[in-house]
Image (tube, rainbow, N blue to C red; front, side):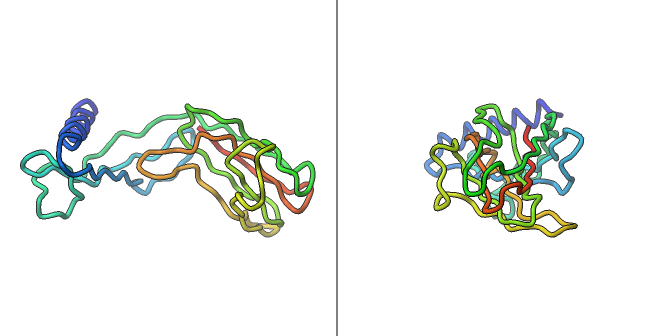
Length: 173
């Protein structure tokens, strides 16, 4: 089943590349959670028309392929807990990694956390993503490295806060 599903996706992309219109390819999580080193399975929400062009499911042009299941991608999770060493000074949370499959940055503190997708020397508050503070019993804001359509941020991730000692957690695969 896996080879068949992957062959169908390859055929779909190949057919779409030859079509006059760009392919429409969206992958959606099926609702399971990330944990124990496993990413959730996805469902391909697309189909083919009679001549092999890709369309979203529900389109009247679709005659084949909607709702194909893709097996889960296994990846061990790496947990990187940390604290901000110096207020308002960016520090490296995780290095750039072209093989990264996903990541999640979690603000574990009661102060706002700034996240920059670059090395500390190039990071600025103006170009950072602000994660909201948590409380004594709940996590604050979270940032996923998933950009969409299977694209994952591979840049270095730097963090800072207005409060030294602000805790954060990076989970990456």
